[in-house]
Length: 234
View 1 (cartoon, rainbow, N blue to C red):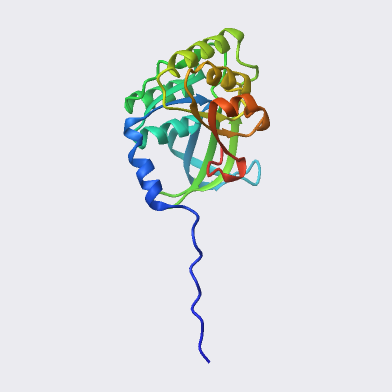
View 2: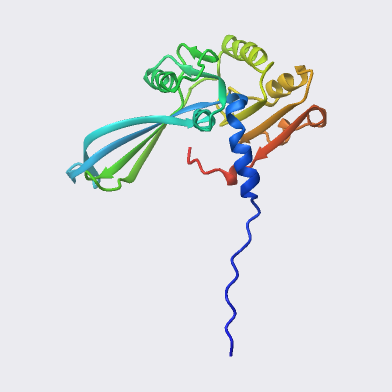
């Protein structure tokens, strides 16, 4: 009796075409409209179990803050070599400072990032327990989110910045995490003002249908990433 060899599942991704696409990024300008999130990681060594409650006591070792949400998308575009122009808002807080410092270090144009007084930069803090030279285990996550919507003045400024920066852009990447920077109306307005078509990619948890009305489809190419396809845990 002969045994049939298991067939390798075929992939729907054309790797050659994908490689050619990636090679084009250094010649492209991409506007990133979306919610910047600070992903904060608190690393600690397990010291003992608390006497106050059945929880671990961690001896703090280090803190890392990396781009999350739309900031992660902007970071990925920059790593691919694209000229990325973020249009977003962050608070006048430590987390906002950290994100600005990070992108300055990568020589990303941050002139489209609006600082908003009294507004909280969305921050997701993860506490990881372990020891040095081991993989930390996440034991707790604390989210800090804005307690109020973006002020009207900040929204108008974002609209002005988007209109200015999108004129010469090759594409618009939208990353909507529900914190108020991006909206279907803002994206439609920007796309309709263009004299030529605009390639738009959308990563949104909200209002998916509202982002793609018929009149926008006629003027732009829209690519939607459903929430289930995301690799981000933000």
